[in-house]
Image (cartoon, rainbow, N blue to C red):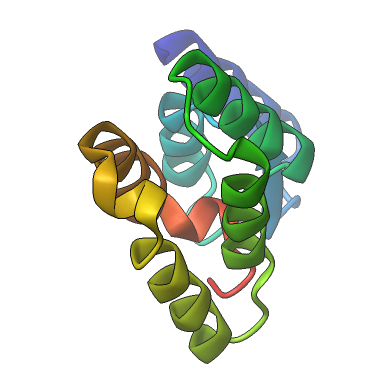
Length: 124
């Protein structure tokens, strides 16, 4: 991913007075890291479409039961505007039978999404 960082550094050098505050990208932690290291203080956000697409693909590939209900819960977490709402939606998912009964789902969601909530959640 050094080529992405190099490209971002070049873009930054061409625009020395530009101080971007936000970037939007698809969910690639290497890209997120390159943006954050190049543009210190900028917030990197995940596009809602790409977030939902990644969730749909994973849920389908892993044959998660009641996929539509799970998607509804995941979207509620992501769209929470306040931390109390975010925490309530997260707790609801964690109390669901799909979450409790599927260790693969638990691991995927906690390690990939909760660990990176600042990228996709509106509460960050």
